[in-house]
Amino acid sequence: MKPVNVAAISDTGRVREANEDSFLVDLDLFIFAVADGMGGHVAGEIASATAIEALRANVANGVDIASSISKANVAVRAKAKSQEELSGMGTTLTAMGFDKNDSLAIAHVGDSRAYLYRITNPETNEYVFERITKDHSLVEELVDIGEITKEEADVHPRRNVVTRALGIGDDVEVDTYNIEFKIGDRYLLCSDGLTSMVRDEDIEEIIKAQQSPKECAQELVRKANNEGGSDNITVVVLDVLSESVAKPDSINSASSISPQEANLKKYSKKGRIGFSARVALAALVLFALLFGAFKTLEHYSTQGYFLDEIDGQVVLMSGTKDGAFIWEPKVDTQTGLEFEKLSQGDQLRVERNTQFDSRQDALNLLEAMRNRQSTAPEIEILDPNEPVIPNEPGLSTSPSITIQQGTSVSND
Ligand code: MN
Image 1 (cartoon, rainbow, N blue to C red):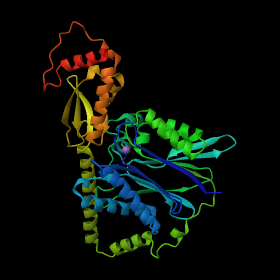
Image 2: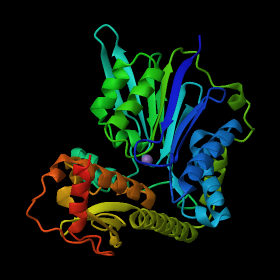
Image 3: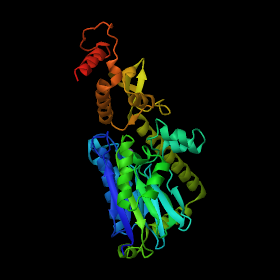
Image 4: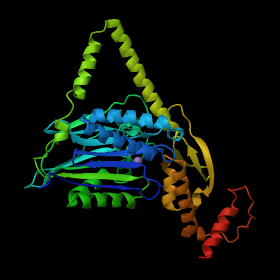
């Protein structure tokens, strides 16, 4: 019997043109991961793919998972420096595998998540369903300090702003969780394209109801697309079938010095330096951390786009809604769409200030909104007495646009 049964799907979704997510399923190395890339053009795809490959290569060399993620950060940084158009790219990375024989390690940076579903009592069907990881995101931090509730976080316009990612700084802090796995456990790794579309309760229902990891993965992706599919959706579903899941030989025969030992050596060396040097070092480390956090925030607060309504007109703004800290959003495009003429769903999208990583994604949705508007029934209810104003070139917000669209509807 195979020790695990695993299925993975990465789907572009219904709005994006490209898929910037990547995943890893390697049964030989026993390593599984999801990465969600960010950056203009092809940069996001390259960021996530680079991180995944670096993770795999390091695990294959016997490096533990958390250190492999740190090394993946170095790889993403190096790749970004190699080409102008890749500069500033970043990615999340959430990985699962074995560090020690008996425990499963889940390590991550960013807002791609890991969940566990475990039946605790098969007779009564009692179970636990829990999120293992904690998002490195602005909204999760706001929830932590009590600024907003979890429910508010789910619909928060800045919910896709991450506070930690690979590619942003020379060093990255990796969170690691160790889990005593059990036969029957079902693990889910996923990008935020799933969790921003599908509520935890619905993920739980699907995880519980679906027989196989494959059916489960398919159903999760289908649900995210049904809910709008506004981002790339990537899921890895893994069932533990046997307790004989053991560390593969390639990891047991790892090089003689483990990364933990390397770290210990580094610390003991630090311990020998004088007190004042240690204070200076601590100050330097603190400064580096603060600076890194600042750069990360700047990076994710000044890039990105969102929809807004100004004087009844739909506008595309660049930056982050309400400005993030000191970075104020700017008007990018006057779309010429009138808020009142949008379908109800699209009005909600504008009211909620739907956010986009790339300008192209925003333009794609606006195009879809324009098309939906011209076929929306409410547009047919035009006031026949309203004078037809000739279309003036360059005046994209003139009312004549609306009337033209109304006319085209009546031709259908
Ligand atoms: Mn995403």
